[in-house]
Image (tube, rainbow, N blue to C red):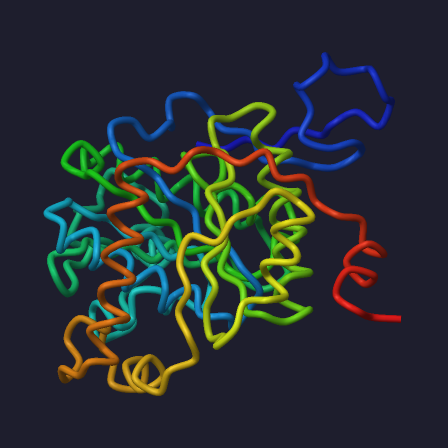
Length: 304
């Protein structure tokens, strides 16, 4: 379960390395909620950049490698696992509301659905608009999974997290993750969002085991702007998925790429996902990337 702690606004009031940010409300993790045994990845990126498509195909790629995979959607839109299950599945919040938040009355089948390739799918959901905290929802989801021993038979957990990091609540999957992965296109807006996510992962790395894994270039035929950012900050590109019609069509067909009609183009994309999964499973070295100041990004990418 997560708790919310206000960080002191007085510099030096907290021991060095113990604060996630000056003058902000941050979500901290109860150590009993730590995910153990599985490799945990948290996927972030600008809204609409293809995080759910990336997460779902990556989950299937892990499954193709023989791993037991759990994907957790962390967006109130609850469509992270749509292509895996072919439907919008009930969220953890829906399940809890159905039993008046008496979690002990829930069964695993009330909030876990098996999707394509044997990937186990969970949608955390979210609090009503303008109320509550996304961090609480993520904390309750992990707590339920642990209480039902569903993480004990899992090799890989993939958190698919909504949009940019705008608060400590949406950063809460980083408390559980080994590596933070960022999905970005080769454009200014998604690189600007990536820079904020790099900063968020760096803040959480002070107190937790999460480290930056790298960027997954998506919906981009070229990566020159991403590579310029990487060179300036110490980031790296883990995989590159061009803007292909087969990827767009897979979403429309409620399908992951591994069940689409075969073609040379499709096989190349599938192979890129399999290579990414293998690379992540073997372990990517953590990055000590340093985010840029806003003005520095404008200067770097050619804005006056």
